[in-house]
Length: 213
Image (cartoon, rainbow, N blue to C red; front, side):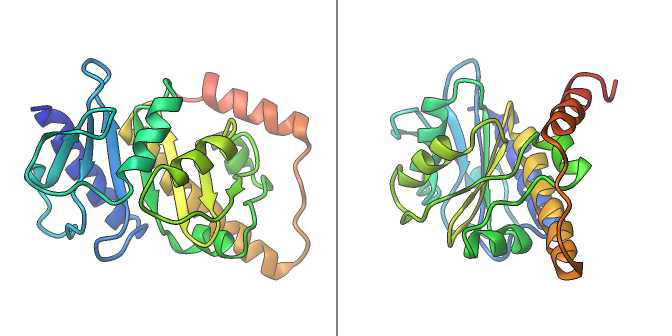
């Protein structure tokens, strides 16, 4: 069931590898099917090399296994919590991408000091607190702290991103790492120059309402 979504998730997981956002078996992408409300997520501990649709698990919103013989990702309950509390979200991504996770390791948000951050996120990329893996706690931290952003850091852990679909959530994961890398480099050179809030809002509006076809 949901074969098209499974195939898309295989492709999107490979994008995480292509953009060097994950290593070994870390990280995951999930998608919610808008028609059925079912969730598709990567099975736990599956290597990216050789990954196929058979490595995707289908679950309902209560965490009940609907299809698949493998255990779902250990982050599944955090994904489910986000879906339950954000009707606008149909894709969730988790990575430990290096530069963004470096900010998480020191509990710092990624400040909105680039037009690219203004465009994509419209605000600082927030950093939530530390919680252990295994239940809904991480999902709650994301929902409580992400605000209007599509990305949120988890202290001492990594990155969660959300989107209207799985592809949009993966794009956000790519962009947050790109932003974190540039901001880290800038911090080595000197004092960061903030962008005025009015300009951040105008840049974000342009990018989300005017830019593109």
